[in-house]
Image (tube, rainbow, N blue to C red; front, top):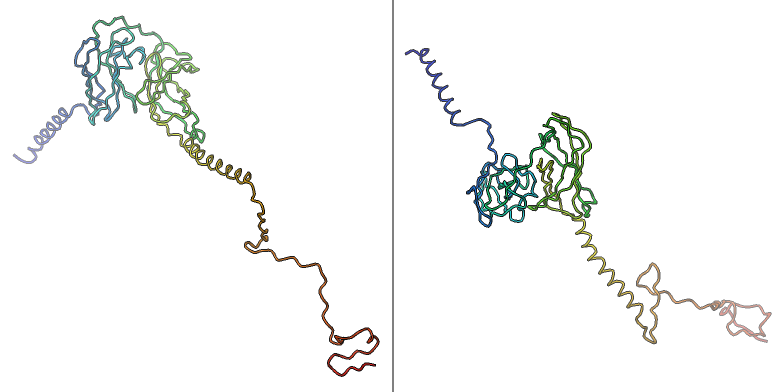
Length: 351
């Protein structure tokens, strides 16, 4: 067979191998979504079930809760207030995004249908639910979904702002939560009330209602900005959550630095105040100490010449006049009027 005749067969073989590779590789770019499974579909209160999951972010910290008024396709309608938060468990996914954890079965504070709710604590928000029937617990139908406007979160969230000098000294840290929400309902949403929650570590968030002034038309989007503030002196790993209509729309991590200015202030206080007290006490003791009798005062030192004593004061007496060479030392009153002869130059005669 010639080379030209073998070319079509070679092309078909390469194409066949390529198709087999694609079929074995599966859908290109497919991302596995988080999944949760329970070992038993029904359990009684006081027992335990084994919860396993896959498709989570590697090394992600997760919380496991038993929640009521929830279904896997609708989520927890009442938020974490419908869950048994005190009996939850935490687990960390492995490098492949898998986990396995034993969870005690407790009755949630609201009626069933119930689920095992798994959600991330930090990082990008993700959650999944698995149905669980609790024997003996009350079951009531879920509230009907509200018709009209419904908000969704088509974009990621972010925290805008930074810490200043006052925050370094213990002032309350503050940020602005920015999210873009869209109205996927059939009617406009006017002045929606959001719930902004802040959670420290693995604790449940503390929610606060905040109203956004504006109208979001069906099919439209709006940029929402909501203030977030922590308590004075707060530091550590926090999570900011946004909830609307009982459903969590977004979660964003927030790492708050320690207010080292407060620590520096107390260190200075502990060093400066004792030194000032000791100095004041020494000055008071020196002032109140009695002087010994007969104690001579030290001579004052001369200014500008440390270590030298002052010169003694001169006496206020006229100095003696020098002897003149032409006055005889033994001249008396009788020699007055005589011409004086220099002493030692010749004899002196007397009458």
